[in-house]
Image (cartoon, rainbow, N blue to C red; front, side):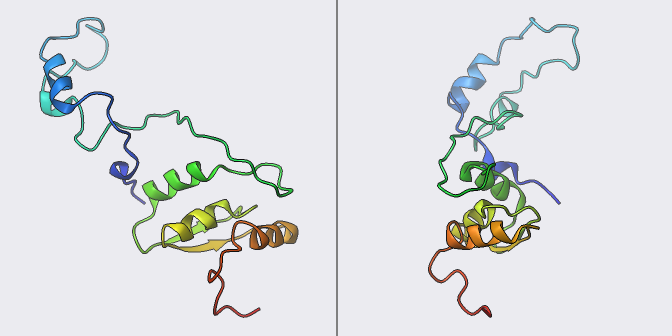
Length: 140
């Protein structure tokens, strides 16, 4: 599996040209630690935005159902954007309330959700996956 980093890049806080101008002087603050800092303006900021990093600040979203640990759709969306190619299939082995399925279908992707709890399956079909047309053509 490969990660599509461009799909989840964040807008850079400064323009590429402005960042390049700032990088023309050496940063001596980390001198002697690890690899040398680059002074190449082409490597200072990616044109599509910056790397999202290791910590993502995402909004929480209320869910009226009874599931105790509902994932925010913003997290599912970012993970799907980074890991699923257009026209692909998203597999969620811990489907729960169906957040991943809801986001996958909004992105026009196919979705397979698995959960041990029949109650959670019913909950997801009533709420997050209860979109008109989503289950058309499936045996009842």
